Image (cartoon, rainbow, N blue to C red):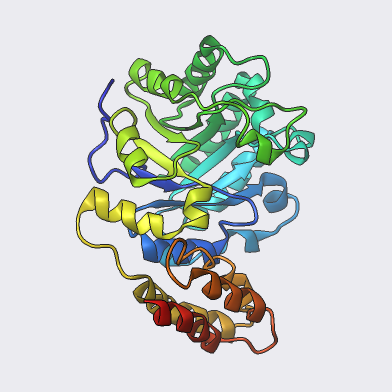
Length: 334
């Protein structure tokens, strides 16, 4: 197997996947406290929402989130180009094109995983995005997140042709979910679980396209798996494991870079100023605490911690005192 070629502290070494309805700005701020170096991604934002809908609020993020990438969905090259420029102007460190989501809603808009069947169109979109960003005076990479195949088009040669088209368009970083997508018959959840993982196919890509930065995604849930993958590819992207057990990010950070991960309660203490500032601007506590429910996953008192937050965060006037109450059973069980 080929050793990863990026330096030890490379930008894509550890990433947290874009996840619809989950990786909003509150989630990303929390994850940044757990992992100073991980690369964070927004939820997918459609180019139409930004360009035609004018929903620039979707670009909101804090300076503390960096490095942070904006993921876009779409298939109109000029519309994606305008959206990419808006993202670069907003200060994102990367613009990522979604060519991996298999949901019906995404397919109906002719973007996501179905675009793997049209590599020439994806290449056209990438070129337009790169040109728009450069013309705007921004040095921001345009990257692609894809699957290893779609429906019956799942031979390695098909993936190889897709990658060659991406390279021709100027892509230097490719995030590959190591499952193929079934566009019909499986839900998005089933598409994350039923098609078998094929890590070797992603490793082979890195061997064949050594100059391409390859980030592997799919089914990665432990520190040991992260370290093993990094023997063969440049980076690892974690999805639901990082969300449901967010402290895993701190453990990965400590494993790769040395040191001791911060205590969970210390992380919450560092989050407090952010929570109080958001409450002051009118954000409901529930929008923040929903991302914290897994912080004590596997620890004594975890169930009570989740229950207190789940039952109390939606109530009018809920504030930091609720988090202190949620910590009481954890402290008692320690």
